[in-house]
Length: 100
Image (tube, rainbow, N blue to C red):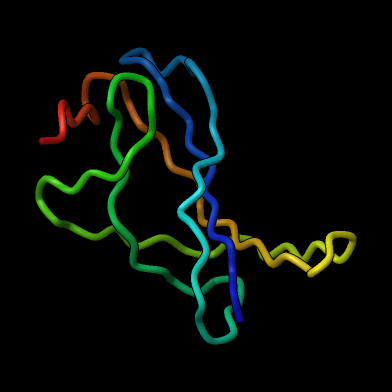
């Protein structure tokens, strides 16, 4: 089954004030049946200026829990979207710089 993986990302400043919130799209993956509470290993997220990107510098993976699974039956074909636990990125601490 194909799933679209998404994650809510809060971008905050050093004083924990929210600058923006985005829904980051990890992409569509084919996998076996999933359930809420399962864990997913995926590339760590970081910031390039104010854009959320994958942080591939160290090659570390991050583990996130599935918090919701949404099946859109209005859209044809039906779309199954998986929401991972939200993450908070701090400007200045999670900046990854230029990717070469």
